Image 1 (spheres, rainbow, N blue to C red):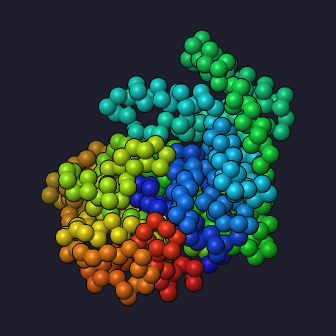
Image 2: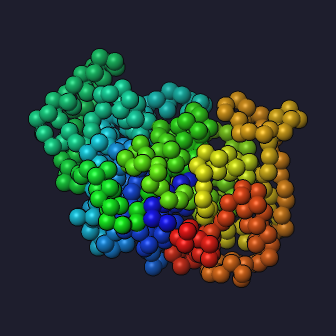
Image 3: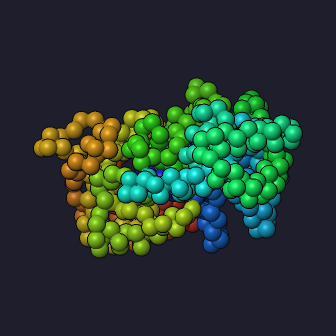
Length: 428
């Protein structure tokens, strides 16, 4: 498998950071292709915790090249801090990190605007990270966005920023201009720092492919947060399914060898929106605490629920997964009984396709199948045959339901706490 895409199969936070870090050893280049610093990919290396928001997780492996595609929106202030933070911990990104000249920049205005917008929504708030992601994508499609490539001509960039502010002033009045005076200095300083890492990412990808190098594409968020295929409007502002790869990195779909879907042994989501298998009360709290289900970017507690295979079937349809990776199997170790959602009902009728509207999803009655828990620790097991029979049955049911092999199973936070089966995607 030369060129593999890693995609979140649920509502994000599936453990993509660990899986990408694990796989990066076998690849030459890692590419992020969408989203911004609303992502939080957590990696544990020799007991040391790293949380990456913008830079691909492969950066933690010496010698690996890392690219940030045009489909991303980049907060230069946050990126500068992330680069400097890695350098302080002995990880030098110079000569290894390249950012697309076509990516869009997040101005502090975008962050403030999103925060005010969320407050105005009140009870209907989306539950965003308030980091300016949505407003930046909106300006991209309004064709008034600030792009990284503009930074090569400082005079042009400053003039473009003036137009940007004039445009916003015409819409929102004098109040906005006062904010800009406070926000521009650090933005400009950080933007020109970021300029040192710019490159032509599609050409770089093509170069490495022509040399026979292996490339791993790292998605952020998850399929159910995709702006087109997710639970709209409670979604992110980019294509977080596999559909975002070609437009976000500049690669032909024909050059993708495999698609690895990452999912938890249960389900979580952050913020508002429908969540058919959500567990209320003591058991939901138990899974949250046992799984450490708090946002890596915001610290917000995640909502927890049973594994939803009807949703996963839809995610498999959209992405065409060729293999699956399950994370956090160990979180279920102590439960007497575990449930899996196998279907949805509305008004007594069983659905054959996934609902396209929030209104429908809010009326869902999930259909559950119950499994006996294995009541023993799976932490540190490195061979599938050594898993408890009940855990193997749980995984076997998932594979048969989805028609896709679970080739990677995570049973702990560390790199080594992972089962790589013989039919792993790496052997394809």
